[in-house]
Image (cartoon, rainbow, N blue to C red; front, side, top):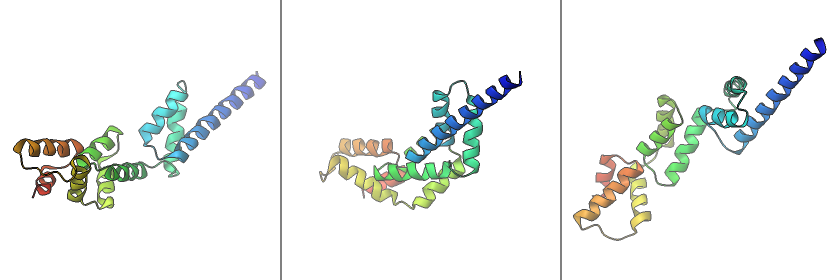
Length: 158
């Protein structure tokens, strides 16, 4: 009976080590949100959701997993790809990132959104002029889809 309990305890410790190791390898590759990391680990260890949650919480407490770093990474990558703040906010919200963290990451990046919107237009349309009303609408919709505000879009066409 005692040996049986020891063996179960040993197996449980081994499983926790495997979960933690997998979490660390995922975090070593790139930042993950709390939700994203939990979901990936639960897919790998479907019967251990409680242990997964506890391990991810422990990693968060030790600052090995950080939603702020994740938000900053997403923000930086999306800005590089010429996306606007509305699109970035929506993506971060889909990862269940706190609004305060979203605002902080967008503030820290100190982006010139009009300049980024103009760059997106240039990448898509080149130097071709926008004389026709329909062209202007088409380009405005493109920028709206990319996540730029109406004010930023208006500023692009001045």
